[in-house]
Image (tube, rainbow, N blue to C red; front, side, top):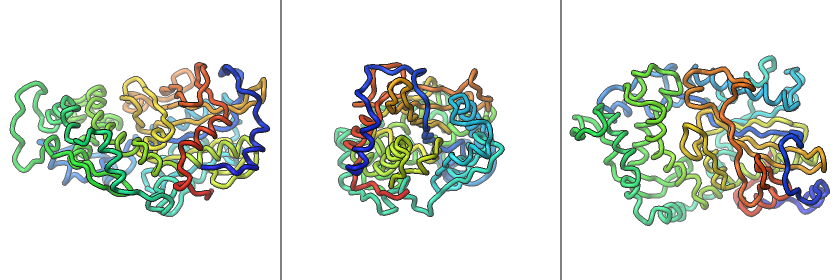
Length: 435
């Protein structure tokens, strides 16, 4: 991404020499971009497939259907939206007059029903007395699916090589690296105590822990095909949803899993996401357009001038973007962002969790700063549908911005430096200038 020269010159006028440090209470929040994942949903595979992976039938979700938001998922997302309402009111971005506030809130969601319903549930918590419109683009949306939209081009051979190079040319070694997780998953799926001699695979069942892990070109949804890891993901996917959706403990992995066990098993899926979306080549192809729009949106807010390739308008103070964990993983990989939340593995894009980009301004110098945090409900907050308040908030961890952050508690980054850093990471060939 290259900002027009005239815009760069105009933007530079906003900056004074970089500060050695910036304290959180010396800044004013001017804009926030909340880039979140969808809420708890039903499994992605149908029961006819899932039950072929396990000795016992999987529990039934409500509502029925594949990859649709659950009732409790909607509740949790509204609770999260209400927390942001409290926080942003404290930060003076919201006034408490929902209809008035709605004029400077922009909501954008990928066009799958699950994503739209999540965005609407969040909006219902953010501004309960207003009717916020969830903006979508007819599929495929170039912001979230740039390959199918024709904005980006994926070289299948390069995709395979870029991932294979991270695996020493032998993807099957993943089964060794994650042998403990594979053993735990098998014991849950086939209902026997972990640590005892594993029994044979039940008749007419598929052992997803033994399907070869291979590496071949994929598609726009999964840019590389890792063979057996895909079936492994389908088999374990319901466990996280069962727990987060508040199912009885006896139905979470058939009574064999708690939050810690689910987190450990999902280390395999976390590795799959890392390979497919955080690998540098794949992150550039899949996430340059999204990153470009986020950066341009902050520049637009700082300058007050409409900018092509930005989200919303210069007056929008709150930008809500809702998508999938694959989109969050890709953006984080492109910008080299990492986080760790208690109870989750590293860099997990949790259900409903969000990367939060804050555009702040120093009250002393007028300098604009970027601050990034990762905010998410804990697994138990999701399970218990815990009301969130400023006194009892979701998890909130600061995120360091490599090549940009200052040495302070919140890892602030001067906006000018953030723009230049992003320019080096975003591949302009894969970014459009549509709003």
